[in-house]
Length: 192
Image (cartoon, rainbow, N blue to C red; front, side, top):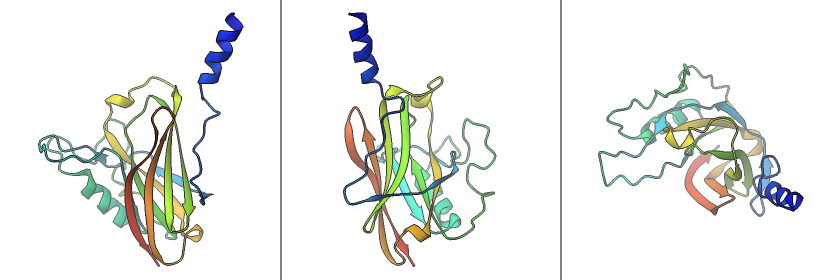
């Protein structure tokens, strides 16, 4: 009986077997993490009409533009500088990060999770998908995800994998193993 329970328990976990699902008609792209810590995004609790979701995606062809957009989207935070975080990171507003050109920058904000997560980028036609996958199993280490502020993370995608010109729709797709798939935010960027 103990063996049967152990097998049932192990199959419910997804420590390494779970993975983001590719949207229909899309293909995976290479991307790289430029910075894990950026401007903090929090709803403005001093303004009850501010109903922004903590999830956000921004896209720009230059580092200066993505920095400007992320700082603007961080919103007015009366008690918090959007460039300060609880971690010891020297460049939370990406002012010391270099821009080599030829990259599409994505600033992505998702709340901290106490479950395993994976991030991947895909392209289907004129839509870029940033897939934020959340598994069923706990993440590694001590979890403080629910207590931390939501900060933008900076990713880069080579422009050579994207359409040369036109409007690119950018979607933040949350694939949660417990609660299903949702498009949490969208953005647009002009290419060429």
